Length: 430
Image (spheres, rainbow, N blue to C red):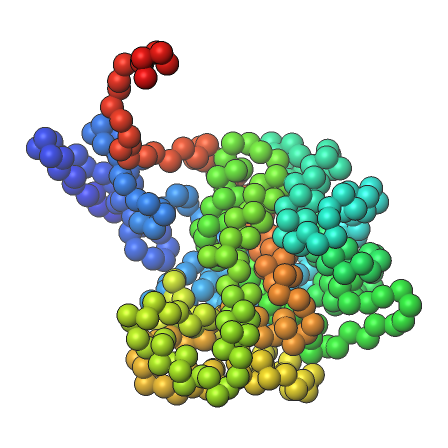
């Protein structure tokens, strides 16, 4: 971060103030307004913080206009095609790609933290059988602080590292347990002889009474889904993790807060919404009418899974997901009218002049929803899988914040529009 120039603000009272303009390594310059309130007795109004930089970060960079997503400087396309989730996790946490010995040691550390405390199985049984898996995830992850007291001191770098490894390792186990509990099947213990994605699929879909064979195409797809959802800069859930962590809360509580934020349908539920809409469309014969509604601005109808709030050109993750989606459907050879419907929607969107001109391309949620359905995941698990993948991003961002000497407890301001001060009226006179 460097300062190259200043910006001048003139208040309605005619006073002028200068503020530093800071430059990062990529992206637009930012006006440093940290002393705005002290200097001018004014503060900014920015609902949603969409024009506010809340932190300095070296982890993820997004250029939505150009369709760019970088993790520690590496394009997401390269990481998804050439790397694996363990390598990306190391990169996110430590800042550099590991060499062979570093990766082996990191993978071993994660693998040997995948089991959860046995008493947690009793904790699960306190939930209703029909509890949503995300509700279970919020509760169980928050409860980890009650089981792992030796990694809650955020001032100890070693304890922070242990907590980080535990969260990355145990999240798939907890997610699979949430699913197994919801369908009445026994919990499946993690296996140390399996890679991360394979292990998760085994815990999800195997049963004790017969052997489960892991399809390598599905394991590769699962690994890519984890990579593509690992981090996405200062989105709602990541900002939630940072805000919770700014108070000094333990890492397990902070990640539980992130899971709660992710649960919102406007954030982590997009791929579930894609499947819901496909069910509502019902049949390929209904597509022309749906396309017509999508083009009609007065209809208020939005075609889920197309376009992106951040990416105004194309979602770079979607290009990888598209190839993976077709590989999975080909490998499974599934005859599913819903998947046929999705593929027809994709074809039309990529060829229709309206969609092309508006750059309403299928996004990562469109393809991930189709892949997960084809793999046998119920829609209630879609956001849970997002949480499993995003944990490494959350914990990397949390670590970066804790290590930043400039970090402060979050305290947004407000524009107060309520009543002015008034006198209290006794109840007998009201």
